[in-house]
Length: 346
Image (cartoon, rainbow, N blue to C red):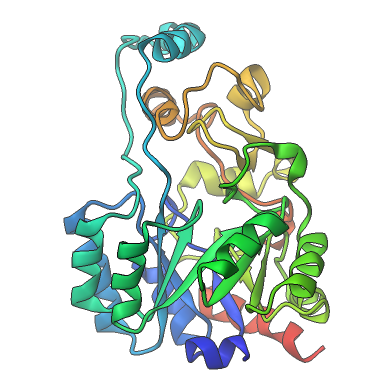
């Protein structure tokens, strides 16, 4: 089955859900252009989620995807939090902040309340990051006919997902921006590039594979399809689109020569994620043993980010981006989607 048949779309192009840099506008633009637009939901409260879903339903009759995290909330540790506070103390002092200040949106896993809300809108595709939610929640999603998708960063994760009946597997290569979807292992040494991962997965699973990571132009789309991917997921290339909510500082970083240097880091949230290297990554990471587990590290870092950004600095900002930042262009999302689609016929 093709991705077009599976999702009811015209083009086998999925816009990656990118929490913090987009809302419904980007998803609508991509869906209306024939791809599968995606709404990131993990950082949205109930009222915000309801508003975004209503906006999508009012602006498109095309299929769209909603994406949720499904991590297990960690146990807070006073000792770990104290160590992280001490690690960040010089920065708080530099910015004139109280070391106890915390900030930033929460990152919550998919739960029954989210399922209740989604049932009112019946989104046709629901995707998950960090594995899958509990079986009863998954059945509720399938109950209204939604297709279920999740990310795999290794062959073992892909086989695990296939055993649980997902409709498509996103092969997230190491080049991808944002959070790694890894969930069976925390070992970064086991992470591989997109093309190698796609090759492994299409040989081992019957479920359609969607290639993600480092794909930012028609040539990248063509390469992924040539290896047997049923479609591609593209994120970084959309960051400069006018429909994205990417901040001015993030846009400036993406257009700078420094955007060519990215790293997988845990200093922003406590979980490995790829972004443009900035001051705090250089000085604390990229992987800091002091960072509390996801998403607990984000609260104190969020306070630093807010203070620095108010002064025009992105020193403490998570400038999420994949390795191919050269594909970022200031184009309407519909135009970019159509340009990516040129790779389908190559």
